[in-house]
Length: 411
Image (cartoon, rainbow, N blue to C red; front, side):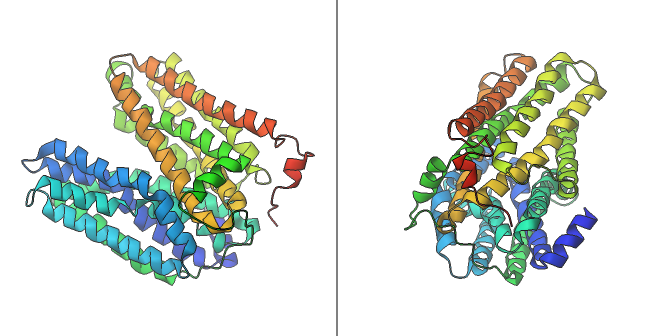
């Protein structure tokens, strides 16, 4: 990681500031669910309110994505916009924390829903800034390191929240997350963002033009399909891991899922140093997605805990190239006037599908873990297969085709 980071810092000094901002914002975002649940559980409202608060923060994420994405695309000062949205999100987190148990539940849920409206800018929206500050030849490394910010947050945020909640109070963990978002709001102001390269396809941006771009531009469409179906598989995995830990393996679900998260971090760092498929990320992505399904299917056949941990790590590691490729595709093919919309919508669609996967796993929790793993495998394979067939239909698998000849080239 150090050599990749040094090279990036020399080529694009602003990326170091971006990386720090992304880590702080995503730590706050990733830790929010657990902190809300723990804080609510410590009051008479209990876990029910905690679950509703998580939903209240997430559901507006999905609805607001095209609108906040459009707002960012039209902004003449995007860093100020991001700073204000991060600050707003942090304030709403703090208010919700202080209000749990002190004011009516419906009022807290309303505040959480309002705070959740800017969530898309913390995830996909923030990633859309990478392509505006990093030279094209370095983009694959930059996006690989951006994926690292997600991996680090997934590993550290729950641990930090649990530690602070245990040593101090659950409310203190929420206030810490609010402070992290406030620091991200200050740090993002240090970024200097260039205007995106001219690749206009859609003339007049509106809240639906991001959907139109994803639907009409084949590489964007296939990437969203493959990654969204993969996200549904990811939504199933925590429940499957819990069942496997109870019935088959000698470690708990937390160890299995942490191993997967660590594998994802290792995969992202390795890919940053040794990238592949950077010329045609839209073609590489569905094939890597196929590969991510293999460890999931193999889990149905093993009873050894060490082998299971290895398979979880492999599944996570393959997510590094996949995550980097999806950002590269969005950067290369998104029309500049709906660029942030494409990033926020793509991420929100993945979030929705992950929720669908989790809900399906919950409904089918009476089945065996192997049944859930088979469903997870099937989701991933179907998404990747649809993507490959769509690319083939429109000529993107053939390097000499007219479609491939029109692909923007990374200089």
